Amino acid sequence: MNLIGKKVRIRAKNRIFEGIVMPSFTGNFVLKLENGYNVGFKEYELIEVVEESLPRGDVKRIEHKEGLPNIKIISTGGTIASKVDYRTGAVTSQFTAEEIVSEVPELAEFCNIDAELLYNILSENMKPENWVELAKHIYEALKHYDGVVITHGTDTMHYTAAAISFMVSTPKPIIFVGAQRSSDRPSSDAAMNLICAAKAATADLGEVGVVMHATTSDDYCYIHRGVKVRKNHTSRRDAFQSINARPIARISYPSLEIEWLFWRFRRNERELNLNAKIEKKVALIKFYPGLSSEILDFYHSKGYRGFVIEGTGLGHVSTDWIETIKKIAEDSVIVMTSQCLWGRVCDRVYDTGRYLLKAGVIEGEDMLPEVALVKLMWLLGNYSLEETKKLIKKNFVGEIEPRTDYW
Image 1 (cartoon, rainbow, N blue to C red):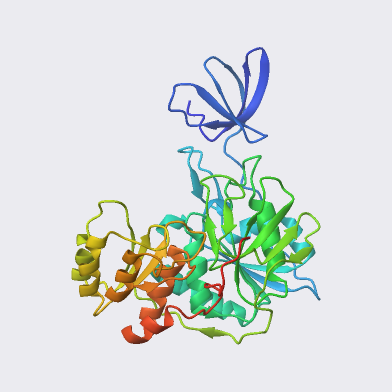
Image 2 (image 1 turned 180 degrees about the vertical axis):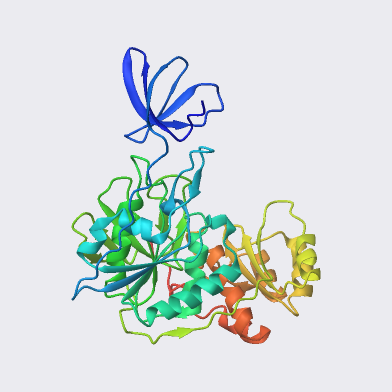
């Protein structure tokens, strides 16, 4: 009898265990217990099948309350919208946005929620055309709601947050949120992150933010600027950090009190506007010792006219790249960033840097490589090559801090 996905009660090691039967690739009998942990047995006795299939629970429409801010949740998938697929044992995107909200009833205490499922994909499958479509949906939602929350997979969330930061000028909060651990795990960060994100969407904020755990404990979340944040750990709950800037705010949990920490665009400070064109033929190239400049020629031959180089230290590549850079810079934009992440590119300190500037490289200031990539895609989608060369160093939404401080 195939028991995978069924809730059973067994006897093993002189004890009674109850849980959901998981797939096993080791030959052991694996149960997911009610506390969320998996346990394996070599020998067991089946007592009974308690439930034939895993119950999904009822999804109830949340009644709107007068006087509360109205928030739109747009779901794109990711771990925050995931549970275990009991056919394979893998974590997959399965839930609609309505199901996410129904599992976090605390949201109804301070805001009214409407929900929309736009995508049900993992973030590695997100593409620039998805950014454009998402930007259009956010733009329309902002006409009717006090704030927008986007649930998103964490691996590429900072790319999407940067793209929306440039494409949508917003007078209201646009908040990205994800989870490092799915909601059926005992250490899940999904519910707290979503609650704090919804609170941020009601706040005095007029820009794109990313809300995630600030520590490994359930004590507070940060609101990070969408163009100054990066995922810096594969699995920790506090994986997201602001780079070359402070977090915008701290949201204590469970009180949901907001403490502002850094400058911000405030609610209604800017007018709503959409500029959602993107040029996809822009490359992000990570330099490493011995990498041939032929990679630039290859992309250039394929029609790429935008290049972000993740160089060493202050923004360097090997001197044998200089002639190739000089050649393609005539009809391309080449932006230099640093693999160091923290700090600012400065190509005027060493000879190599000065040669790169003469060859046509543009310093990326303190922008993250990923942000510089998205910004260049957006600029080339909306402006001429010569205009883009001037605008790449303009600070549009806080992606460039005018001075380097130690945080």
